[in-house]
Picture 1 (cartoon, helix red, strand yellow):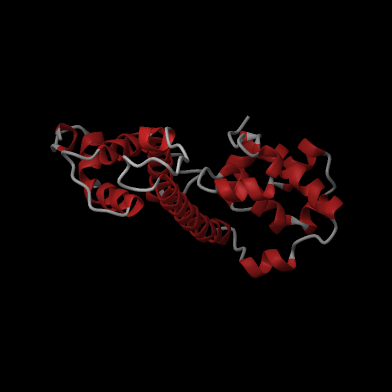
Picture 2 (cartoon, rainbow, N blue to C red; picture 1 turned 90 degrees about the vertical axis):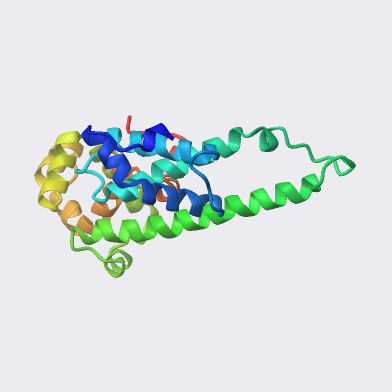
Length: 232
């Protein structure tokens, strides 16, 4: 594959140096050994890695390889969904020409998809723990600092949503690793007491909203925004 030949440009050098990473992660996703010359999945992964180089924001996502994994995984899932053998799958148990029962194919695909989702959730929780850890926050802190009343939680979710859309506040948050209480008070009209009381909880919500890798957590915390996780 010509794209894997070592070249002089810095981008091609980065891609070449991460060839093994791209290969191993793609094989892990596909659950089989692949070949650069014959398997389209590796081409998809290579293009996704190049996309990750374009879109990675070190102020938002601390780990480039973690972000690259997210992009590769999403592009491979799109590729799988477009494959004709899945897109045109019919649940006809009388298809005698097929070597495999269509229902068995679907069951295998569903099992594979579920396994990907399980791995995604495990990765997201680990990544989330790492990100809030940068702010000196642990899971036990969040358990102890979670509001009991739904109205309070809903109010804090709305505050975090407003804050996540203000680039200056977000930049300061990640730069200082402290909640910019003065700026958030001015933006949302929330009292200092509330912001200080729920500081850790608010930071965790903002981290979820502003980290592309935490898609499942976004959907869990903000189910009404499912399918619309892009920053507006």
